[in-house]
Image 1 (tube, rainbow, N blue to C red):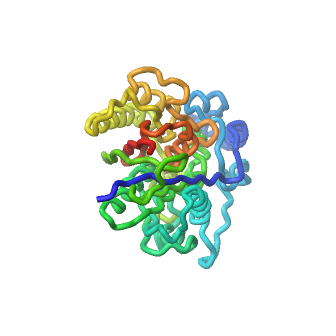
Image 2 (spheres, rainbow, N blue to C red; image 1 turned 90 degrees about the vertical axis):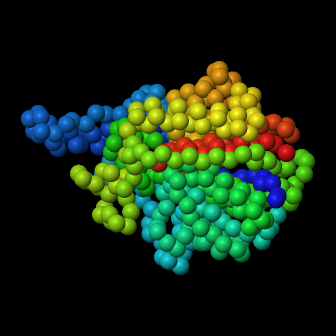
Image 3 (cartoon, rainbow, N blue to C red; image 1 turned 180 degrees about the vertical axis):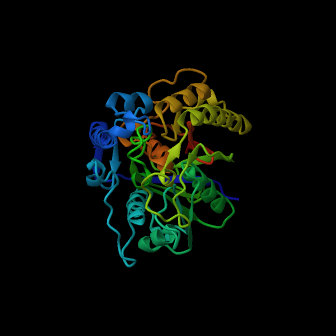
Length: 376
């Protein structure tokens, strides 16, 4: 059976950057209005006063300084605090598919082969804009790709689950090459009125092309990456949840509807996910004959700088040197499934043939995926 290779990646970044200072200004204006409007109930102990946010709080808690978003106007309006994304007609390319297509076009250009050599498209993301038809099929049509396409959602681990699925199609002979895209409009599912999470997410799209090793380029900068091993893990938890869907279609606002947006028990997530992921990485590395402490680079899911740094220390057995544990949180924030792919896309040009790294994701479910790669 053929080996599977990551042949190329692509990135689409929305045009608007939203700073922590802008978010805080909007959030604090909302807090001031809420507390003023509810002053008698707050004084009577019937309603809890809201606490303002701050740039210092956000950066200490997360390492995030800014994020890209598909719309900024609604996010800096204290009366709205959600993105203004106009609905499109059914005959127009959807917003999510449009982002995915842009990332895919960059990946295809870097690959240097025609889209006609791709046999399948997987849209792997946390935040799908509709139930059906699949966004992947829409992307497939926009790019003129034959074969088949489907969506999959494993929250923040969707990209590694997508790479694993793509690699399985390739190694089984079911596809010559697979395009896997991760369009994430996280701002549409974030509660910008929640102090503990209003800063977490950003919007972005990434793309990965996986193809058979016998077809991949040999030698040079564009030789690609051998996939040495993939492993997936899930374990049910309510600590990260989003209940919005077609069975609960009410507008995600107001008391009783807060769980129709992103909610999490952050401290519980930290305590439970860090050891789960660290142990999974080390065990998987050992099983395929890799000493995890010798990895040249970690491209982890970009969830939280404290979480990422602790996983890095546990896996490498020491404090990571600059560049060993890639962090792009400061610029992009948490971009769900796309985070580890942004890190990989942005920081791999210095690898020599034979050097090894790890793409790893983890998130709601819980879910986690590891993909060990070696420069060809």
